[in-house]
Amino acid sequence: MDAVAVPTGAGPAVFAPPTAKVRDLGRQRYEPVWRAMQAFTDARDEATPDELWLVEHDPVFTLGQAGKPEHVLMPGDIPVLHVDRGGQVTYHGPGQIVLYPLLDLRRLKVGVREYVCRIEQAIIDTLGDWNIEAVRREGAPGVYVAGAKIAALGIRVRRGCTFHGLAFNIAMDLSPFQRINPCGFEGLQVTSLVDLGGPSGLDAVKPALVGHVAAQFGLEVEPAPPPTL
Image (tube, rainbow, N blue to C red; front, side):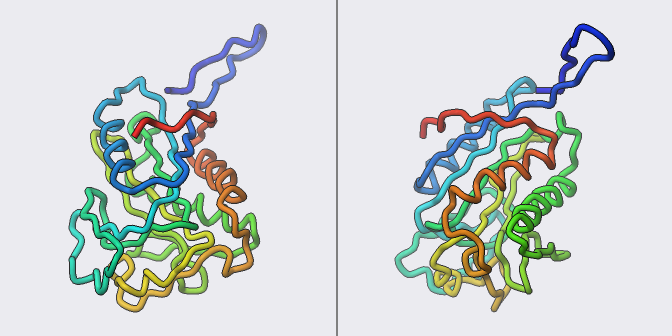
């Protein structure tokens, strides 16, 4: 909801920041979560609080709306799903944090380009918590460390509201990335947080990532039960 004035009894009103519900879905197959995001976005209105969904997906390759099948080189036993986000092909699997910000950009007064930059900055700031220097790259959304991609972005905006989001490699088997051209770039190297000296547990990283995303958008966060899938 919009920030509201909270009476304090004396002096000027204090404005409380909007609240976002944080839902940790645990490990899930990709498609039910995707469909739930779509349903949430279609059903929400101007009064619906924003949400942040955290999930760890079973192995899957996802290909964006304009994705080119030729970037999927050797899928093997990993399913390929053509989905309604932007971008090319990426891999989701165990050991990766996927965060889906379900935000009303109109209410937050944030444009799409700025939204992407703020999400990237939240990941950069999270890596900074472990003294890892990361950067964004012009024309190739995501976050990079020493030229290797550690986090991918793929978003969709419908009626001013976001779904899909970011995938942050923490401690995962990176070999499936060799079966694709990650994000459409042949030979793009990928890395993970544990390979850079960071923690191997997702639970150590989730609060930091959520905190930095919330800070980028001026949100207070509160835990909530996972959605029904």
